[in-house]
Length: 253
Length: 316
Image (cartoon, rainbow over all chains, first blue to last red):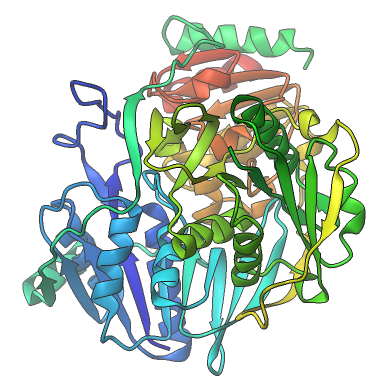
């Protein structure tokens, strides 16, 4: 089973986000980017499929952050066969534009499955997996938590809510929006990533940023008021712990 | 103004609360813009569910054995056809809605806005959205006079979608033939060792716990409080705790007396599953963490500094 995994850098979720001066978007200049965590799960599921059924894993990375090369070398070190960086220094792109770039990069490639994260924290205009599937005219399943290869099909488990799941038989090629791989994304030793870097097995494809067809526009952004409901506890950990125990006892526990 | 169309969703014979919330939201919108609230209902043997959607003006039902189960491509095509005349389409931002909304948008060229918590249809179509896992709130405008809004759970009161008069129910034929995604069956979750929905005290770990080994200290605290450990999604996806311990949209909804979070940022999907807890106490290093917006008490600091203090204080 040949898979292509679509990888997107997103602002590091543990970093504090800064707004630009006129509060119309994030200030991306000083942000650190990491691989979208759901894309990491998509990559893991693709590697698990390769290990179970053979085939290849190709990773396509959107070159919208300096970190993309590190992300692609890490994917190679984990077991991807081919890595392609799409574009360089791309501005922040709408999902519609991302889908167009990926669909173009997929043209002429042969694959049974395309996998990417079910969502990204900045997907303002829809889900990449579904948009790419629509562009290519192939089926999609979102919130996938496991896949198994069949004959001309793939069996996928989709999660609904409250832990309820359903199994689907899906005609290939198809696009999967992965929520979680069957196992946590593997760690890979830094030395292996360094080896992958030295081998330099990374190709690059130029990309002309497409015209944005999302027709969705950020007017203003803000950090939501937090703590409006919460009474903030002052003091060091010892004082805070004493206060928290008092609150818990007061709640009748 | 033409109609507001609501994509409803149901599972195991029950409409979701969010379906009713969307009908309530649509009612608000028609009071600004005119038109009718039209709810779409697709499934097999779902006629009875239509009677519950009292907040709609019209309900269009596609009742077809082919749709005994949710079909990502099938449902998207049917809803796309049913909603083709509407100016505004509200879809749930859920497992089903993700497959439906973006596919409808791509097929029809209608813009789609994700992560919506409020929608307006005044001079322009606009929405308020929670981006970056709730860390950023954005005002968004759509160019054009039609749009699809994918709405987060908890954005309107579900009761507004239930009440009302008797909506006119119409039956429609499915415009789609065979689907390329065939459901083989639905699986209910297996019971776990602990039922977190029955606990009075939950100590809840998030990304800030950093490693599987560190969860041990949270377990110690939970035991000292006579409660159990639960977690947010990233912890479950890492395989550090079983699925039965997950709170939130794709996990369980809990209402313990005390909900103590350690390094949980408070993404909208998490808040959906715990917002009705009795006393919510949150500890996080990030003063901007959205969890502090829902918590009753908060402390900004390192969970690994305070954990031993809490355990000592309770056991001492």
